[in-house]
Amino acid sequence: MADNTKSNSKSKAWDVGRLPDLTGRTAVVTGANSGIGLTASAALAGAGAHVVFAVRDLERGRKAAATVSGSTEVRRLDLADLSSVREFADAWQGRPLDLLINNAGVMMLPQQRTADGFEMQFGTNHLGHFALTNLLLPYVTDRVVTLSSGAHRWLGARIRFEDLDFSAGYNPNRAYAQSKLANLLFTLELQRRLAEAGSPVRAFAAHPGYAATNLQSHAGSPVMRAFMRIGNRFFAQDDHAGALPTLYAATQDLPGASYVGPDGLGEMRGAPTLVGRSAAASDAGVARRLWTVSEELTGVSWPLGAAEGAADRRPAARQVAAER
Image (cartoon, rainbow, N blue to C red; front, side):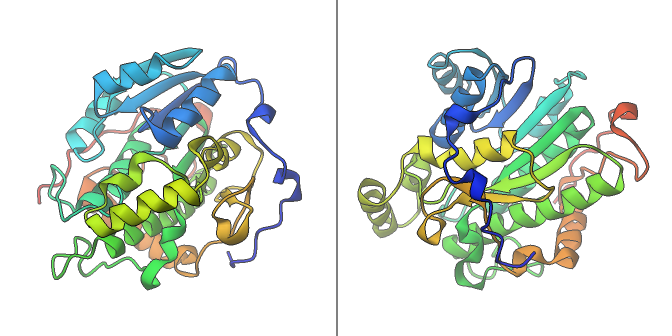
């Protein structure tokens, strides 16, 4: 997947007004209580979908859902706690799920750990969504969309298998870049596995460009927070424009493993289109290794057999997360 795929001319003028009728479809959106997650959820519900707000704070989630016209419900999900991820999946109880949008994320935090001991950005942005996707996959009927970022290119980003948690020296920017690279590699390997299993489900990735949301407000450095505030005010597009790549990936007929982002200069803003990714994000061998490591860390395994079709799926046995 070379970095030369910015070519889908039909997407140039695409906007939320071109969403298809989603009546009868169900979507789960993680981090749906604010920013791009809330905007995307409102658009999906407005097009007729039933949208499940998967949020850490139920009160904030209910307040956000109350601002949305359409069919919604709110369920608790803390991606930084694998027991919460398993509880969310166990409570799904076999309902068909058309669309899973792995939207939630944290960005450039001071050094922190998840409930299971993982570096917070890798644990939340990648491992939490990895576990959630695999646990819900027996119910998914259409597609999985995972939010990445142009940050997957930062600082020669790579998956630091020798030190995923940056224990030898924490850098919030490098840790964030690693987590966003992991999102793309996860999508790549997820699509390979779905195709091998004969599943009609497709895996996509999207990024919003430079969108003004509250994500940047949690950066650990005061200087970085100030820089982000200036950028949000003068250079960023709003969350409605930032949500368009997510909505495009969620509803348009695209090849599996497609990556959607803005079509403007540097992919910072603009209409949604297919975009390229770094060589590191296209490495199938690294993607497979990351998948294996992620299974070991989360205790959650691939739920579909190689020859198992969508019509014959049954929930796989759920493993308890590995002790660390």
